[in-house]
Image 1 (cartoon, rainbow, N blue to C red):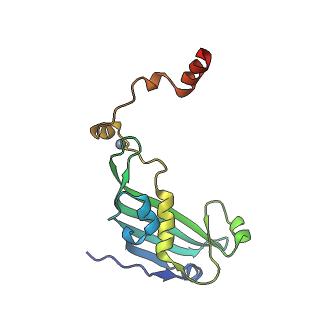
Image 2: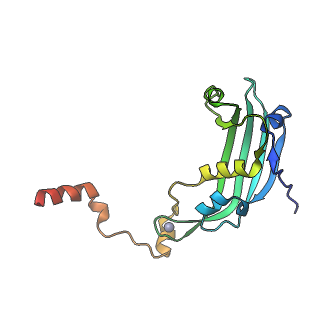
Length: 170
Ligand SMILES: [Zn+2]
């Protein structure tokens, strides 16, 4: 199976003006900031983005970046959690902060003056935003399979109640 390779750099303004596409795949191993956030990163990001100019004249890059399964550490059981990352991309190009402020709300600003930007950086920024803030197995049974046990009694004694009773006793 052949996957098209992505260019290393793009001129986003030109890509939008020409209604270009950015499709292909990229090994996550070349994204150091993302690798640092993952337990294991031998996955691939599949990029399917299109660029254009909308009816308000906003130059945009839109689409989806989806990875094959990456490994994170579950924050409940500290076991390995496998899941694909998916970033929905909706970037509006802006040359400066003032222009970024004027973008319609459904765009995230991509600040770029004239020139080229690295495609890997763009993909990495989007995937970092797609990382779960607190990775956890959806199903608690998966955590229990890793030896996780609910701490005894905690469900019935919220920390604030415990604190209040401590204060009363002192
Ligand atoms: Zn877990």
